[in-house]
Length: 77
Image (tube, rainbow, N blue to C red; front, top):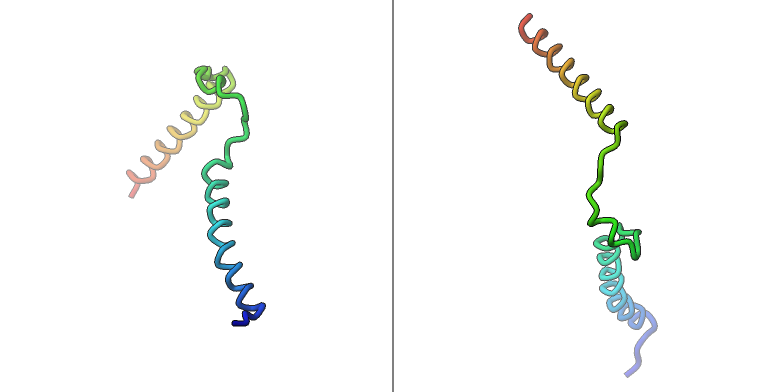
């Protein structure tokens, strides 16, 4: 029985594709972690800095101004 090179190529393709899919899925699931060996950092609670607090309060004020503007526009209709 003689097998053509195209048959071998097809067989190799069928064998390699599932393996590549497994490696790609492993990369998607575990690929986002770039802190190798730094597991102790995750247990410490993060303290927000003063700058973050100021930005948050600024964003809240901007959103409140936007809500008030929308309310006034809604009342005018």
